[in-house]
Length: 259
Image (cartoon, rainbow, N blue to C red; front, top):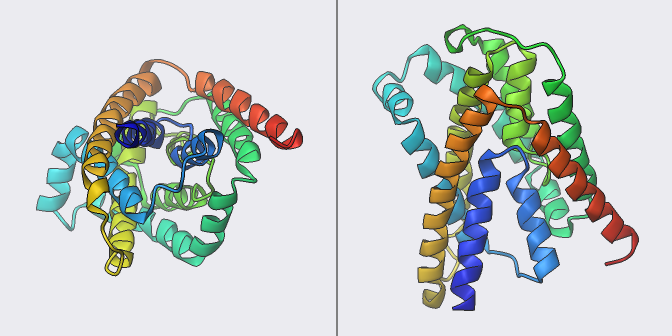
């Protein structure tokens, strides 16, 4: 029962923090250290990503269907252009950033950096470029920022939304493009991780907890996306900035005191 609850908890954390601008990897690293949890393992990590992938597909099904039916459309090409720098950065520095994630030594500073980015972009003048006006330069810049978010506690959604806003894109459309450009990135991560699982033995006792955790990741991801679309359209991300500042400060204090 405890194992099932742990997987549900991790699934909810993954789903919520993947799409809120507060970093999913940073939270998973933090909770594992605070509660003494073991590494989730490659299989469960892949399944969690798959759950969040399904959440994006459900919310943005009209756009996903359009991409499938129109593989040479501008939107498809924008996502391809944006994914290239993400893939290059991810593949080039994969081992280095995996090592950082395992130690968690830098997450306090990274949470503080995420907060600074969110606060700064919310303090700037808002643009009004519509979704249809997003160009390949925008996609390249946003994709590069998505690649930079490979650091454990740098929020992917926070950085990509911030990049879109800095390019003068309308707030609601900035969030929409941020979530859409996450599709190939999450899908690519699932494919790469699945390829590594070929020789990994499956513990049947863990199958049910993993499936349930994946389901909760998808449900939490769906809620987070809907909530974030509302917040970005009518509110401010400064509340998230304050949250990650407090979290980052507490982590640095804990590290300083040797906890």
